[in-house]
Image 1: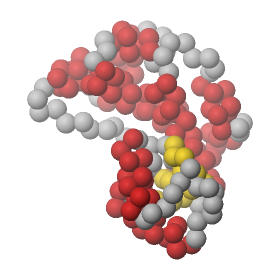
Image 2: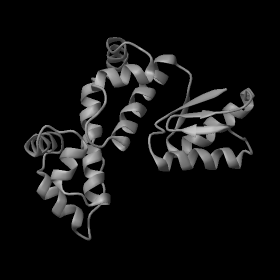
Image 3: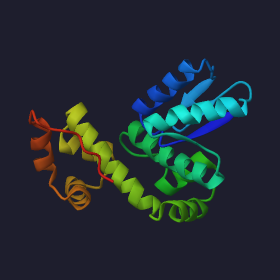
Length: 187
């Protein structure tokens, strides 16, 4: 049995889900961003208990197939940026279609219907969040980040960063080095 969890898109969220399942003494086979696999079906009471405790972490179980697909799209995009270095093997649309086994047009339509925005917009904002992570935690140069995330040039990265965040990369880098820096995710 597979349960899909809305907003489970980071390591901290996975840790929260693990804690909930341990607290409820519910064993699972595997856990990935967005989903948990169980060896046997859960009772309605177990599902209810899981969902109730997940609310504390702003997480929830999902049953709607389109919502599940949108979360799977988001997860695939996030995973791509955490495993992507150098030239990608596939174009983004082909990658997403192969990961999710749906035509890209269908994926784009479902995403837009549910989110009220495009996959491309989510892709770009997620890519910029990854840029921020690489600056803050990996301490990579802007040139290295540009190469690792397959930007056509450093100037393209800089322009996209400013368009999404409203600040230049150099200002963000200086801010991130200050002692008063607080991580703020862009939406």
